[in-house]
Length: 284
Ligand SMILES: Nc1ncnc2c1ncn2[C@@H]1O[C@H](COP(=O)(O)OP(=O)(O)OP(=O)(O)O)[C@@H](O)[C@H]1O
Image (tube, rainbow, N blue to C red; front, side, top):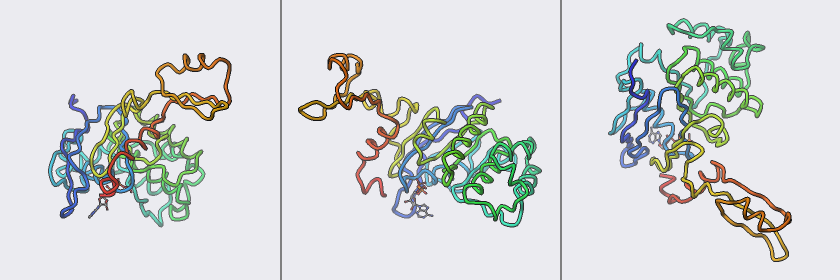
């Protein structure tokens, strides 16, 4: 087995005419790691993922997935990756079990069809046509199709869009299980809590450029994660950023009104980073 990381991206760039939509992006994803790519609409996340899946060609830079240039990936390579595209597949007339059975035959080490249906919470709907399912249920079929081949690298592009909160939590459980089997996962999502729950590391991208790349609990740097103590008194509302929140609380003597100690979340850090980009850059 190769020791190279399963995903290696170096200076990846995509231009459409004069527009650069992915601009010199570099990162690696280690074997078994879950990596989240975060960024606003139009940031370049799907374009990056689609270049890794071999569906789009880079203008410059390189990508290697399982040691292979995705544009040159053959059938064997494709059977080792799993893809959940952003748009829902239209598998109209087939039932859930039929479409999964059909795809399972394509892969040399496919998962058990009924276990996979159960894992995505569709056992009750296994005999229903995919076209008769709700949007969120169809999305679960997409996810089932992405994992049926027991991929070594799984690409999930906004997998839980349209899921209700319980379905999202069930999905997280499923992805944790897939990750614990050693699968390397690249996830894009607009739900920062999802990235916090699932990802080991994340990259934040805006205007095609990678603004930050780190462990999910460290992204933005120590400064951005400094706790904030807030309280109110007769003179109004106060806020202090401090590495020693307990000492600040003690110094207040007793418990002042509205006391809260907040550790900035990934969402706070993300909004600060995205907010600091030029609007036209973020929109470009
Ligand atoms: N075929 C194309 N021709 C020209 N521009 C394109 C093409 N495909 C995508 N783009 C542009 O590239 C930019 C990046 O799009 P991309 O879909 O990668 O963003 P994203 O980060 O995935 O956004 P979202 O969160 O909305 O899915 C967008 O401005 C989009 O309009």
